[in-house]
Amino acid sequence: MDSSNTTEKLRGGVTGRGFVAGDPRINRRGRPKKFDTLRREAIKIAGELDDSPDSEGGMTRIHAILLDWATSKDVRKQQLFMEYAFGKVPNPEQHSGVLKVETWQSEVIVLLRSGQITTEDVRRELGDELARPVLLAAHVADLTGSS
Image (cartoon, rainbow, N blue to C red; front, side, top):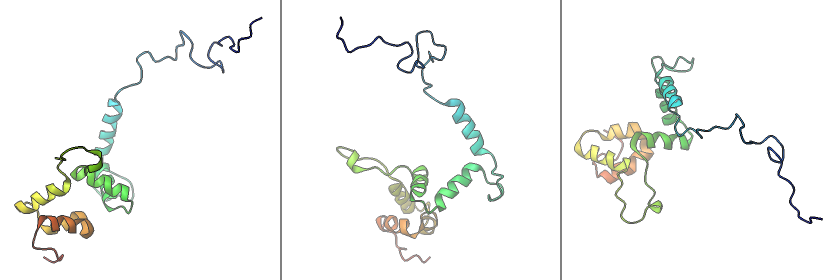
């Protein structure tokens, strides 16, 4: 008499519905590594004009999405908008050694100092709350909010 606790392995696993040798459902090529077709369709849809009733005329869907992110009260949407527009702000805790990553703030400061953008441009795009520390760091004269 065999006192083993093991039982004979069932075809298809415990439920009988799992994969077995020769099962036609097996994906021999594996999981798709990239979704190129999906990406192409998404880009095509993003570039189409947004014809929804609440959209402004002549605006593409991606423009409508970005505008929604920029004006949203949802902080995550605002953060994503800023990261897409100016790049991700590096987290010093994730890096070791000297951090040499350009941040969107430093790019704005360079543009301000070179005269390519004005303090009004910065306030209009970022709002007063985000613009103030950038303007202070840039050492620009107009910090009061007036022209």
